Length: 107
Image (tube, rainbow, N blue to C red; front, side, top):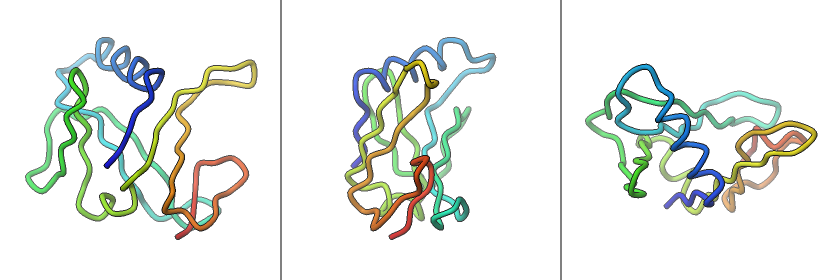
């Protein structure tokens, strides 16, 4: 379903280790918005929702809601650290187009 590169997995593990509360997993979600129609969201969650799709990646569990799951199928998440900044980068084979900044897309 969703793949995290080693760099992304390492970054998420560091965020989980630094969290103030216990973490059940990393939520990756799609919501309406952005300049292309949909945008990605990520947050550390203390609990999984009853209807979440849970992807077990060892030290990290991904939590995906039923709406977002089909739009995230086949997505690869990377973590980029460069002089221009750092952050997560999504490569989505389901996206028909995406904005220049890469944080929103359309299907």
